[in-house]
Image (cartoon, rainbow, N blue to C red; front, side, top):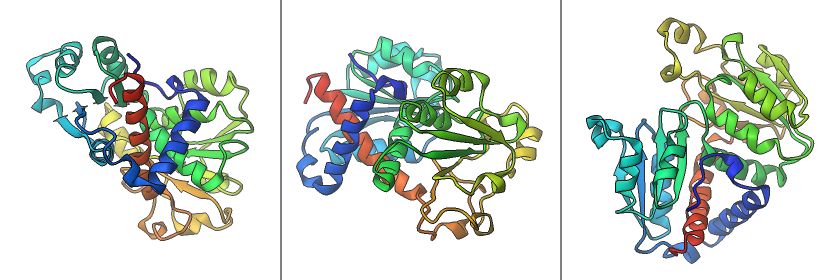
Amino acid sequence: MRSIIDILDLSTEEINELVHTAEDIIAHPADYAEICHGKKLATLFFEPSTRTRLSFEAAMYELGGNVIGFSEANSSSAAKGESVSDTVKTVSCYADIIAMRHPKEGAPRVASMAASIPVINAGDGGHNHPTQTLADLLTIYRHRHSFSNLKLGLCGDLKFGRTVHSLLNAMSRYEGLEVVLISPDELKLPSYVKKDVLQKNNIPYVQTENLEEALPGLDIIYMTRVQRERFFNEEDYLRLKDTYILTPDKLKGTRDDLMIMHPLPRVNEISVAIDDDPRACYFEQVLNGKYMRMALIMKLLKEAGTI
């Protein structure tokens, strides 16, 4: 039974296929309205979420299916000490596909090994978030019509940011990528990601703490929040949380077609004054996430032979 735990579980050909399916859903939504009629998605969210959980639910409803699940660990038998494996074995009896978020890295992979239905990783700790990356990729494609020859700036929490790690994994397979890593020293991209993704694929990159100097020349600036929930020390969080705030003044001298992206939720990283800038893409990313999750749900259920 195939599951999607890491963005690298999908080939570039499959990503292209999902992008084209999502674009067809956007153009012809009525053609997809009953494809998952009678099918159930289980959303197992052991960690809080707004966009990802509601996006999965909206995706399944718009495919004509139904949704069951829980939105926090305390409302599941995990609060009684049930293992992830037992939870998904149980849920496999009720649903056709699972979307799972968990604070522990690797938990969705453990789930996929125990489940008898497809499991989609909806975010695991600081590790992976493949469907956010699919939302990011559709957004990039609809603006650039390609994933090649792009200069990508990543700013903020590059250490714990699972969206950053997933996006780098995805983009590393395309030609002509250049990367600018913008973060305080304490939140630098982990050395294993630099080694296994950037250096392994001979991707040129620079590291800097200066956002303003990095912005000119970028095709994409991908802002991220400093994540309170990943810190062991509140003092460190408070010291670092407002390190980078993107404002209209800082955008002076940047490209007219710069893409301003953010996986959300936003705290202070992007001024609300930028929301009306035509280059702001972050709410478009939210909408694109629904379409790509629709495409992925259909793909996995078709491969499983259930639709």
